[in-house]
Length: 181
Length: 337
Image: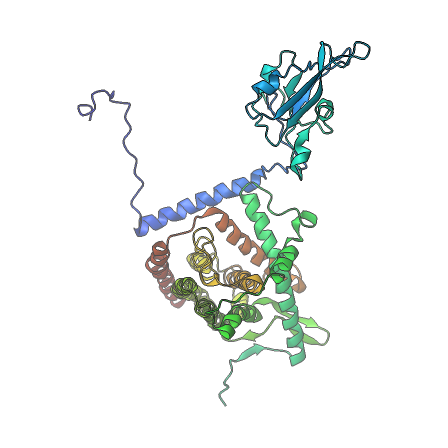
């Protein structure tokens, strides 16, 4: 063997393992034993109990970096929007699903911290591919990918999320996986 | 005078018989839908999942939903079908299953009021033959159903199931013959009473295994569910059936499974025997039957479907010699002791 395959050290090649020949009394005896082994295996599954996650009632926790529905953020202290309407997210979006219309801030009644703010900020979630490029492109961390994934709806129009919807906290929090889980 | 009909061991007046038949029929027809949902739930547990648990409490209303769906379906008949035979085939199958229930002994004779009542449909002296006669007639249902559908696939499926059933019928009979010889009777009640000392599963263990294997094939349950083979064929002889006609075939399958379990419990597990007073007999019988049904489900969850040639060679090359040997050894032992 080792002369045919000089590159193989003697102890590193495995002999092909073949099962015993089927049929005959020996085969019948073996089938009986293997059947009992199979029955033991299935019974062990029954003893273990179901592994099912009863989805609408129970939810699988998502990982911290899970890319779900987007969120827009405000500054915690001043309550001003972080988004300055620069449209870099819209430029980065490969699915072309973000629409930003910027407007000048009124100094008496500021909406965002910068010179301008997004008067219209819409994400068409029917088109979004959840790649997270918008999050990467944003210079102010104004948009991040959240953890919500239950976004099914009855018509496409309802999937266009406006700025108010993206700024609002989700009604139900998606369970989050703890470290190392 | 020689009677045309079989001798009857013990029978009550006619109206008691009628009441008893209605009770047994109602009981089994109540159990069959429960069995369908229990099977799916048990199968689910074997696969580490829950099974149906959405309809009603714990999913127990599932058979009701299934029945409503089946009844609500369009009654479609293929153009080529031979109408009458096509419609009567499921009825034949379910009839043979129900008819066999008559001889399943649920308990010994009990004193009720001022007379004895046997807790079985009727105690005939030819019990085992009756069972085999009716399970043979069940073939006609399958064959007629397959042929009268007017579809070549149905017909092929019917031929396959007929070949399978005929192959295993012999082994099934021979597997029971050991018990018959030990009890010295064909009557199921006498066979149960003969097991007072020891259940026949101990001396007839090989017979029990062979009977169960043949029973799986007879009822075309996994791993011998080749007639339907839901994963790779359409449905064999059932291909052209839909709605409640198909449901009738399925119901017949469950009744047959119940009957085979009942016969196995009678022959090998001591039938109604169990501790407690006499009126608990049916409970013991039912417990044993349900335990055997659980084995049916367990096997279904475990073994993959055999190939057709494997099915045939198992039946003719292993099961038939084994059961014949079992009968011969039992015969010698019965004569010697």
